Amino acid sequence: SVFKKMATGKKKFSKNKKKNWRKHAKVDEIEEFLEEKRLEERIGGPASEKSNDDLFIISTEASDEGAERISRKNRPSKPLRSELNLLEVDGKQGKRKDWMMDSSDEDLPIKKTRGRSRISKASITNKTNKEKESKIQDLWDNSDVTADSSDLPINRKPKMPNTLAQTRLTRFPVVELPAPGTSYNPTHQDHQSLLREALEQEFRRKKKEEKVERWYNGLGNMNHVERQDTWLKEISEGLFEDNPGEESTNSEGEEYVSKRPVRAEDRKTQKQRRKAKEQKFERAKWKSEKERRQRENNIYCLKSLKRQIRERETVLKAKANKKLEQKKQQLNQPLRLGRLRFEDPMVDFKLTEELPDSLRKLKPEGSILRDRYKSLQKRNILEPRKKTRLRRKYKIKYVEKRSYKED
Image (tube, rainbow, N blue to C red; front, side, top):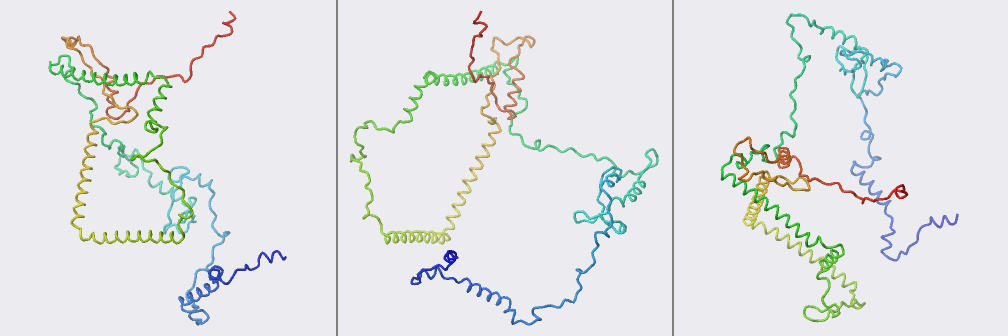
């Protein structure tokens, strides 16, 4: 149709500009022709100019392509899988064993699986039964019979778990010896040192309680509105000026003047933009050239470079040693395995007037179960825990029953 011809017609363009020549010029056919010529030059010239001896070769050796193949009808029949499952091989029912092809089994039918030639089990059953009969021996015979090493049970050494080979993460002993002052008949010096340790521990506990109490008295008594006002006041500190009515001035006392909008006369022309771009390119080129010259001049500063490398290695070695010392110190302290930190248990002690005269009158202090539990936490086996109370997510609502109201 006319519309189809108009759609598929050649697009017109002006030929009086060099830009359109480059855009609409078609040189695909010329490039294909030149590429064919280059290929012919690489392979020794065009095929039309070569002789038959250069193009063809007469084969003098026989090929195996014409060998007769065995048809599917002439192939030996395979036994059914149900029959193979009923066969006994090595004294176990249904167990299959791979038999490799040897010189004595050339006349047996071959079964190909996964690229390897195997003998079908139906044809080797008689052979395996004969081998089994030759190995049968009388167990009650007293004659010296050398037992086969393959029939003996293998006593394998149990494998040690990998966790046992790991180094301990702490140096604390499993059971720590109690302090000498905890004895029922301690010396005066040992007992006083134990009391001093218990007193220091009590002071630390009181200090923590006072800190929490100070916070509670300062902020805990505030309601939600007061707390929100305090928070807003702290956050907005310094954002607003003291006298918002006065005009804003700078440090010199002059009035602040906002920037004027850019006029059309102040905008850069295309030529100015091109020059600025060229200057930027020249500066980057000069900077890279300067860096290259500095790298080339570094060859004359080998002594100073070696000194800097030695200083750097010394600093890194010192940091590594410091990190190693910190790791060693961590072995003497319990790690933080959870949200809570480990707290030392309270020291068990008795006052001087509470010390008994004999072991029979001694009343034990503390708990063995609590001591073992704290020891597991200290040796990084258990994380420190805190007893939590169950809290209701809803308030209890009291409702009078209808039967109660009626009464």
